[in-house]
Length: 359
Ligand code: NAD
Ligand code: GLY
Image 1: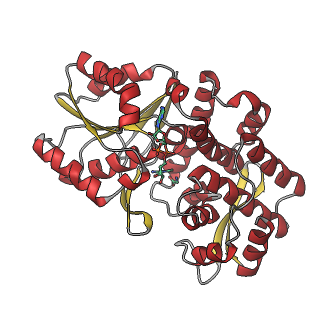
Image 2: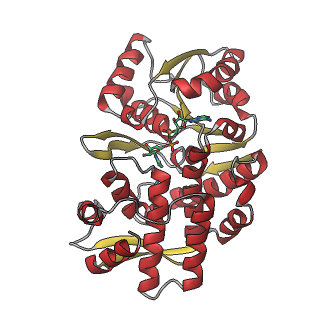
Image 3: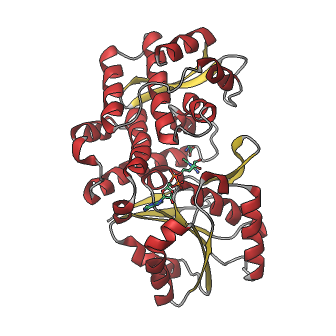
């Protein structure tokens, strides 16, 4: 078992990582001085697998757990769904110190986090992330949000959890596609900050799916440590935190243009290759490093080409990207594996050239 402390001056919290930790949630919650009712937001898939174990853990410590089960899927990150949860919290007579626990992947974490951040101007939030992506990324750092209209994560807040419990044994039920989605973010951490982590994935590529518990723990620990250190320096995304968006600018475009048929991890994989190619063309990233990036993505089973012929729609979508500055794009580019920088003013012509290469 490993513990990381996210050392924020006003909201320090622990990320606990290891196999079997679901059973300790009740005890840890009690240790934070909570008591009485505890509201768990989850979905039917995760609830079927792990609801009972979490319930037992809470009851053992004299909590009164109430499960609010929302349907599975990204479309649940909506105002309507948040509204239903607010109504349910009213009916439960939830109070300012009633903790809200998210039990699920990033969708549940973002939705429950949004509700916790806004209900009564903020009730305590605890994340129990159940996907690789949620353990390495979305449960850490306090970004909570819902989607609105055609825009993803457009209504939200920075709202740090009081505790994150990442039970790595939960990966055993995760479909391989979801492991791959998470691995896209893991590879991202390797490229932006940890060449050793990148090499670890390279050398374990074959047995990595299904994810072995020890390897899972090591991977989650390394990624969560990187994110924690970044959050401590730039909680509100004013500078350094932007590097976590490596691969996400082109990635979001690919995701949107595909109507979400391309998953987030697949889209980020393509986006990471696009940014690496741009960096290579600008003379920053050596060809050998570019090849390692392409190769690891391919071996993990993620795409290295943009699906579909519609590059023009993708370019248009990128013009609307909120990170666009004065007509040119602002991108996170790798200069070697383990080190990235932010490049302002990447030209439309270079972007088009690279997207054509990836078509
Ligand atoms: P998800 O929450 O949709 O989970 C993926 C699927 O796995 C779902 O069908 C879910 O029911 C299932 N599942 C979850 N845990 C399981 C388990 N242990 N066993 C079996 N099935 C399980 O997807 P995700 O990839 O975890 O999260 C994606 C979301 O995270 C997106 O909405 C994205 O915007 C958000 N996100 C947020 C941040 C942030 O900083 N807040 C960062 C990255 C992504
Ligand atoms: N997932 C990007 C961030 O937390 O900033």
